[in-house]
Length: 319
Image (cartoon, rainbow, N blue to C red; front, side, top):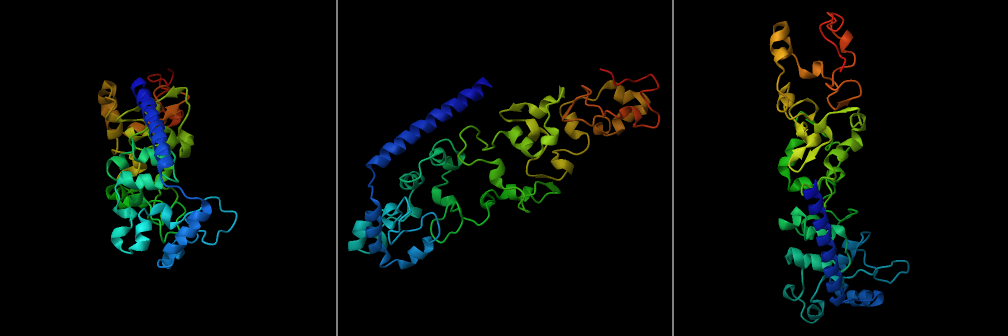
């Protein structure tokens, strides 16, 4: 845990330093006042009038007439460097097209207005940035009605790149992504510096929806609440996206239990090995935790079987 905490602390310090650098760089970037932005962008729109319509209603709506009540002026010259030369020599070579810029160059342009944790982490600790995924890989500026200017209409546009993950949602049991009950961003936080897998608190994220099995319990099942760097917690037993087994389990039958627990000798020999032939959860029903028994046995086990094993005097549920 100390190693993880130090990693988180270092990540936060890195984010702060990057934000300071971006802010300093932005102060040297060419800045425009509201009316200056509007007036100089009008010259661009004399030829590119279709671009005015392509931004209408979006967060980058161009306030061409200087209507009051709009705090920040957005215009062509704020994103497209080289506009001065382009006005004198109109050609594709004299204007900067954002899609032709590198990740760092796109971040510099977008960072003139957007300076926050998401932007800074994407060019520092986030694995998307390290993979060369740029702003425009996920966002589309023109002709886009999406609130966050994402590339697709669905918030699950992530599956455009993560195709194998998309296939997992077609398995026998799965989280309800296709029905729209959940979204990728419900569990994954883009630009999260604290977790390389982008999961927002792996166990706690699951428990936000599955509170009925989250405890706390008097007798905790350690695998439920413990979290290791490369596994543990809920995902030790469950596939988070989809599984060919019931309840999103990674293995069917007793396989999920046996991966951690050996089979007690008595289960192999007593009652003709009946314990070997039965599912573990037939008796150990409270596998997430129990307030009654440290073996997570069914509280009604005493009356569950016809023979009533406990009343025979051979077995007891007492700890």
